[in-house]
Length: 76
View 1: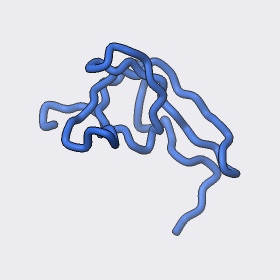
View 2: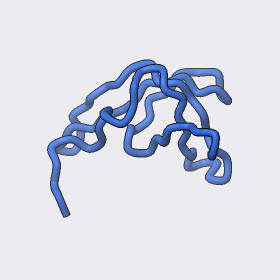
View 3: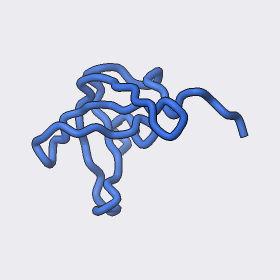
């Protein structure tokens, strides 16, 4: 297993990208949002990369770990 300094990377995404993720409380339902900015936080001995995004279904801003995000495509 490769150990990295960062947990997650914003390289796959850009600000304004439409993304989806699954919420642990509602596993069968995909959440959709638009990325506003990226935030790096130092927790647990490493840097975690979060995306601050606007969640469409909840109509509010959330911070989600980048590693859990997927770009929304016509195939999703």
